[in-house]
Image (cartoon, rainbow, N blue to C red):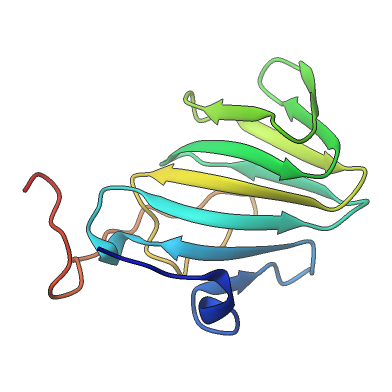
Length: 141
């Protein structure tokens, strides 16, 4: 069993901030935990425009707080974002999140991220694999 709080990971290497100060990702479950996915709490600051593209990952996002807009850059379609909205990037869609108010969301990535990934100039995380930490779960067991 793994039990963690966002408070205990704040200020650690699991607490990753955008160099431009637009967002913070608290990476609660990572590849090294050996469960086959990663789980993050991400906060995006109000009044920001954020371009992302997860070329190597499927991401599911559940918006808990805040308001904004999701733009699918592949189709041009826009979606309003508010508490209780889920979006799933199951086609590796290039997308833009524009925030009206500060947004807090819970995100699941598959394959899991290692934890130190940062978005490159195209908004992409590299595909990095990790060996589970000793004593942790192994996928498929």
